Image (tube, rainbow, N blue to C red; front, side, top):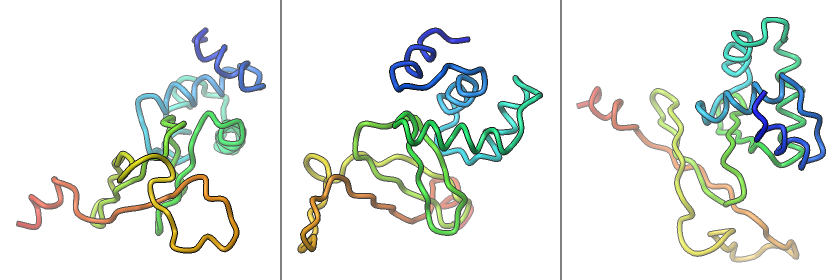
Length: 140
């Protein structure tokens, strides 16, 4: 197991299980992945794992703040390791590719609502939609 990830998990109050480490390792190289894709990757390393296990691990990692869950409209929930900032996402309306967009302007939450109805705003979640470069080339 990755000792750095063991420390990250322990510092977050979680046991460093093989499944949790495998999911974190997979997310390091596959940002914006859904549970099914992560399951297929983790299964190659841990063939005893189940899709339910991966869902449970993702829930634990999200609750502990080690993973961010995003839910673009029309897509399964996606997960990423990039946390601790208030970045946004751009989604291709043709192929579904997802990319990161750094904070639009200023510090988090990047956008200030005209009225927050008494809420204290901590983050803003913005999804931009358009065509990725590959789909733009196909459309031309």
